[in-house]
Image 1 (cartoon, rainbow over the protein chains, first blue to last red):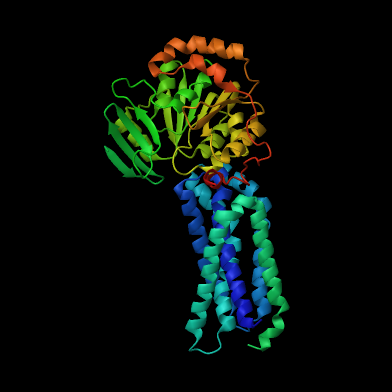
Image 2: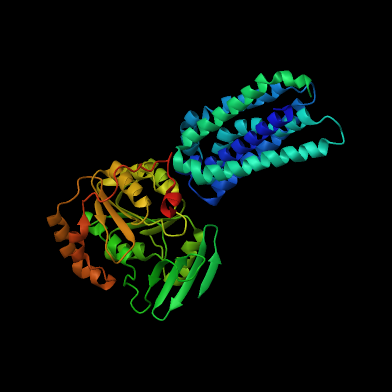
Length: 200
Length: 273
C-alpha cells in the first residue's frame, strides 16, 4: 500500500461520512422540526457553510510540516466530536424547540448546534490531503482533481448507501456511531502509517 | 384537467369528470384520486376510505374538538364541521398550495370554529401539547401522495398524538393495507395503543386504524352509536350501520416485524419492497 492509496482511501471515507451524516440530518431533525422544505434548506446551508470553513482551516493547517499523523488526527477529532451527538441530539433539539417557535429558525439553530463542529473538521480533510500528495507544482491540479474525484465519489456512495440500505437495516444512532467508528479507524490507520511521511 | 400546479411538496392536479371534481397529488393523471366532490350533491363522500374514517364517530359520538392532519379537498373537516355544529375543527396541512386549492375549487371555508394551520403535523402536535390543547377526535390522513412522511409513522409520533387526546378521545388513521409496511404499522399502533380496531373492506386498499386513549367500547356501544348517527350520515353516503361488524380486533399481521420509531422508520422503502 502506498501513501497515495492510503490518503485516497481516507479522502473517500471522509466524503462518504459527510454525505451520510447530511442525509441523516433530515431524519434526526424531523421529529422536532418536521419534513418541510426549509428543514432541508437549514441542513444544506449549515453543511455548506461548515465545509467552507473546514476547507479554509484545513488549508491553513497544511502549510507547515504536513504529516500523516496530523492528517489522521483530523479524523480522530471528527470521530470524537461526532459521537456525542448521538446522545446530545434530543436534549439539544428540545432546548431549541422550546425557545424558537418558527421551525425555519429552529431547524437552522438545531442543525448549527448538531452539525457545525463535526462538519468543519471533516471539511479540513480535502485540502490537507492535497497538500500531503502534491510534490511538484505541475501536478498540483492533477492531485487536487484526483482527490476531489475520490472524495466526491465517496460522498455519492455515502448518500446512496445510507438512503437505500442503512436506514432499512439500522437505527439512526447506530449509523451515526458507525460513521464515528469508521472515522476513528481511518484516523488511527493514518497515524499508524506515519513512517511513510519520509517516503513522500 | 382544470388546474395543474407544482407546489413545494407535490404536483397538485384538479380534474373534472362529468359528475366529479377531483384533487390529486401525482404527476400522472387518473392515479390515486386524493379527494373528489360531486358538485350536484357536494355532501356525498366519493371515496370508500373517507366514509370509513367517519367510523371515528362510533368511538367518540359527540366530539367537541376535532383535529384533522392532512387537508386534501377538505372533505373530512367540512363534514365534521357540518355534522357537529358545536364542535371546533382544526386542520393541519403542510402545503399552503393545498389550502389554496381547497378554498378555490372545493369551496373549503375557514371560520371561528374551522381553523387551518399551515404546518408539519409533527411540529403542530408537539406545539399543541405544550399549549395543553386536547382533542376528542384526531384523524390522521396525511399519507396520500407518492411519498409517505416517515416521521408521522413512528411510535413516538403516535404516543404524542395519544397524549393530545382527551381521556375519552379517539384516533382514526388512514394507513396502507398492502406491502410489508402493513405489518410494521400494525405493530407500531399496537405498541402505542394496545388493542385497536382494524377496519378493512374489499372495496378499498386503505386500512383504517381506530384507537382510543381509554378502553375500546364494546360492540353494543358501537352499534348504538351507529344507530344514532345513521340518519344524519345519509347525505354523506356513509353506511355507518354496517361498520361495527367490520371492526376487527384480530391480529392478522406478522407480530415479529419491527415497530417503527424515530430511529427506524423506512416507511417508503418498506412500502415499495
